[in-house]
Length: 110
Image (cartoon, rainbow, N blue to C red; front, side):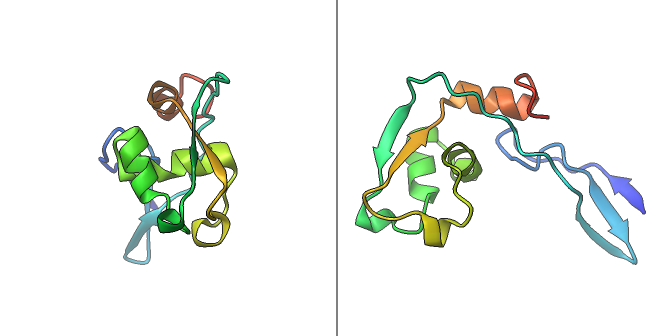
């Protein structure tokens, strides 16, 4: 099995993931979930009906990128967005600086 480097944006949770090749197919290897540190003064957002089963708009509006949906999932312990994101629930929005620290491994997440 050969390893390949994958170049992705700094906001990608797959940023440092190695690609593996087996039997002519290339696929993602395993990756560790980043440890996003919370300070206790993070912004909170209430899910509306239009956001039922979705986090992409919230991630874009609050963090500036739809690619950061996993950051919201991680800190809110959301397993399956379509099922678990319901109107009325309150989401913790991690600070963008803490997300980047976790992606860079400075908080012990990688």
